[in-house]
Image 1: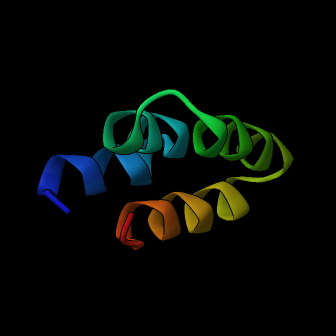
Image 2 (image 1 turned 45 degrees about the horizontal axis):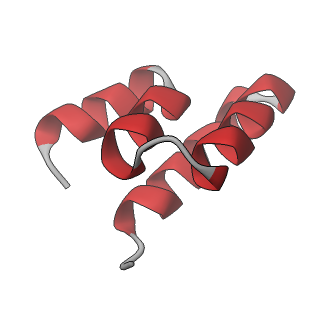
Length: 53
């Protein structure tokens, strides 16, 4: 996980997921979680970035 992906995930979690994994279910779920609250989206963003495919 590079520095820029971490920074983008902190600033805007869906952007970090989009850059790391592309457009898919993880991105859509992260948008929904971020709308519900910043911290759920942030936690999900880091979880998606660090889990292995």
